[in-house]
Length: 181
View 1 (spheres, rainbow, N blue to C red):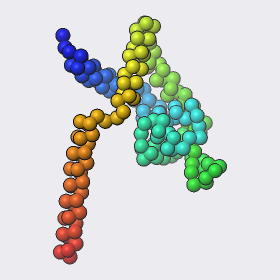
View 2: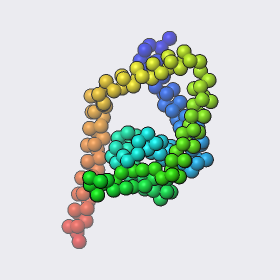
View 3: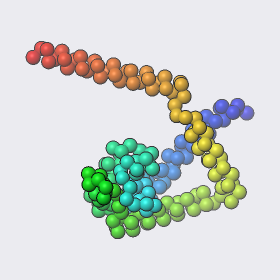
View 4: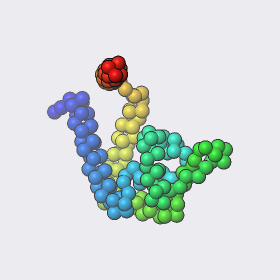
């Protein structure tokens, strides 16, 4: 029988594979509506509360503002959302669903719900309750971990240093080329 660390690592990989399988299945369903998972995430988040800034959307979806900007651009082009200037600052925009975006969001949410019912919905109530408790416990452990461990931070520092080294080498080459001309 594996020790707790080995069991945790095995479970981690199973969760990653499970998430990948779920994403593939949901992506296939959303493709029928011409949506990607991130686009659907934006639309469904806006059904919960319109008028968010791109920064608020990015924060709610755990992505960068740059990612949201591109997603919103594509959704605006598809006439599913619109940017409206905010009252307090005409340079800022709030994001709203169009009627077509609202209809599509509800269809996509329904398709996801159908997927959940066809999969997790097959588990009995007690197993779902136990599973939810484990997911919440795991979420709380991750939240309380406070981000990167010292070992992870050391790895990030090495990567940043390597990137910086490549950048400075490129800068040195560019300066050398300038000096020759």
